[in-house]
Image 1: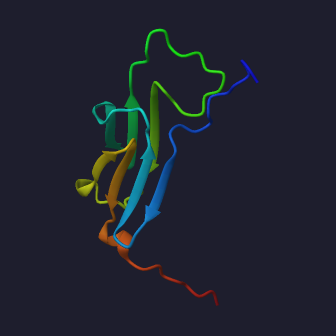
Image 2: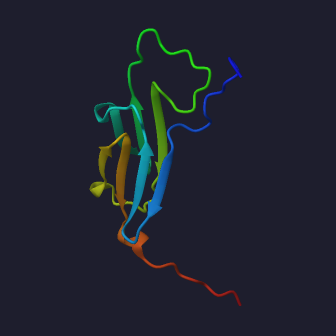
Image 3: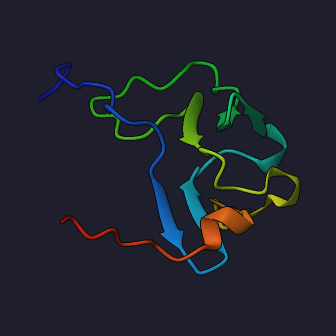
Length: 115
């Protein structure tokens, strides 16, 4: 398997949980200091990115399963999130982002009967 590795198809793993009032993201950005992680909103999307300097000389991987220099993840918000109330914190290499729902997103699902 030496020299036959592929970069992962996806960047850092993200779990998204839904509560009654919010969407809760857990971004597994191990090795990225919070000072090097950026969150920004544009075009109804949340952009999550991180970067860091690699040691010199850079590691020569025989297998690489997570990014070590930079990453970017994009989460589409679709008007479901109150962007003025988004909060984030980092703990033990995991970035936790809380996306509070808009009032419209909190409304119960409507079922429409087909005649």
